[in-house]
Amino acid sequence: MLRAILLSLVLALPLGAQVKVGLVTDVGGRGDQSFNDSALRGLESWAGGVKYTGTAGYAPLPEAELAAGLPPYFAELGIAVKPLGIEPVPLVSRAQEDYIPNIQTLIDGGCQLVIGVGFMLENAIEQSARDNPDVKFMLIDSPILDENRQMVTLPNVETYTFMEHEGSFLVGAIAGLVTKTGKVGFVGGMEMDLIKKFEAGYRAGVKQTNPKAEVLSAYTGSFDNSTDGLKAGKEQIQKGADVVYHAAGVCGLGVIDAAKEAKVWAIGVDSDQAHVAPGTVLTSMVKHVDLVVYRSIEHLVTEKFQGGHTTLALKDGALAYAPLPESVPDRDKVIAAVEELRKKLLAGEIKVPEK
Image 1: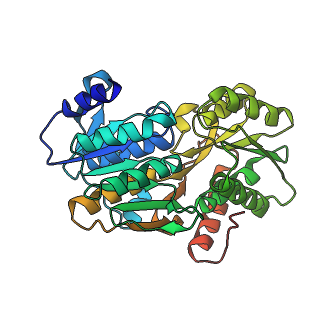
Image 2 (image 1 turned 135 degrees about the vertical axis):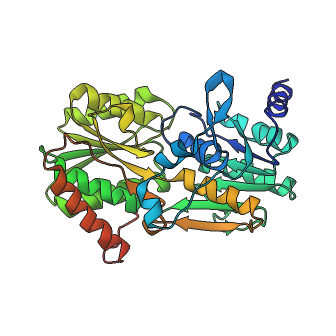
Image 3 (image 1 turned 180 degrees about the vertical axis):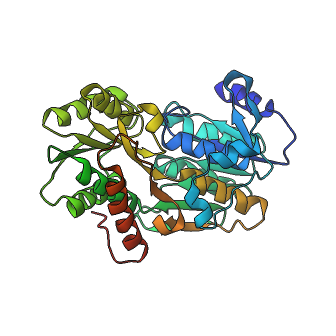
């Protein structure tokens, strides 16, 4: 019954675009202010040229509004974004059990490309890709792995990962420069290699600008419970942390709430989260999930989709730190110092650890 309802929703979406592109969110879905929302931006706003209006569906996105939402460094790196004439068809996963049914609903609805947002969808994407060789798939944050955890390449699957430790290094450097207590915090979601890359880069960045600073660390065990993030954030703040960086999805919204309540700094992740708590969010480690979603769709519509795995770094425009608020003490000096580090990273003069 649920699958029939989902399929009817897919088939009832406005027609007009020649190519349907489906997307299955991870748990947390639309409104997580982070990973899923970034992917949806790449699908809807950038590739589809539309904006989501809630129950009313989609409305055209004015060209000026699209341009205003692109980061300025895209132009510097020669990254162009323009609508691709596709029809976006996103489905939200409420639980992991939704992954495969959602993917199948999109396939049944005629989607030529199905995007899986997050490493948790690896098995679902692999199974669906093997069962549907004529449909193209894209997976974010993990390659396809065999039983020995070795990378497997499928001709109808593009996979993307990021060098998150590089972006985390930059926000860690900012934290090291801004802290007054000499203690900063990191809150991760699930304790796994991917999230530990965020922590490793952050620690290295803090130590680069403030060798004596202490970095507190905690993991919530999930990505979808803001209450757990609130608790972890409060515990670190009570121990003296006056800057807390999260890589914890929806849990991270709780970390930001804890920082706001205590009047200390929080550092966001994936998207620029300044709007979540203006005056509290010091910066964010921007991970352009939107860009890889757009890139894969572009490969589809230009008939350049080949499958395979790609890892994107700072030099590719895939990672950045978000603008600092004007209220940051010695803001210009902080930015100048971090920009110098960013240039050294781009030049290969600094190697950031992943562990």
